[in-house]
Length: 157
Image (spheres, rainbow, N blue to C red):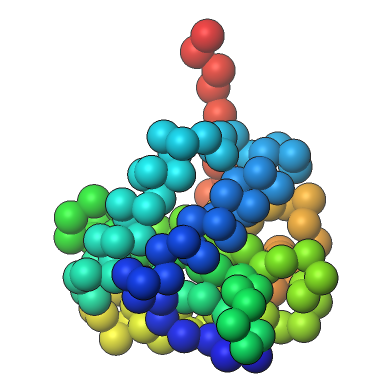
């Protein structure tokens, strides 16, 4: 298994895996639709990160030529959000193909991306984790994530 920073040439694999990620998270309570508009948003985000190393990163996990997992972390728009804690990146998410889970791939993707963002000048990574996915929750806390708040949602219509 190989983990590497994705390049523009990996666009098809990144979006293929990201669509699977969105579809799966929808089934477990996620809210972002796996439609063409949202996939277009994430493709533009990925291409921005691929062309501007300081903006963020996308990592892919591979077995030979088969993509096994993806992670997208970085700025939400323009330079990172400045807070009292410093420069903040967004953890958009990570996904590993079902047959390859529980093999440390997501943890390896997260470790690589965390090191990358630290070297790019980010101080904090903010994100959320699916609380129904015990393995994912355990993995992010093992990396050093801390609970700082609770996300809440207000339905307006």
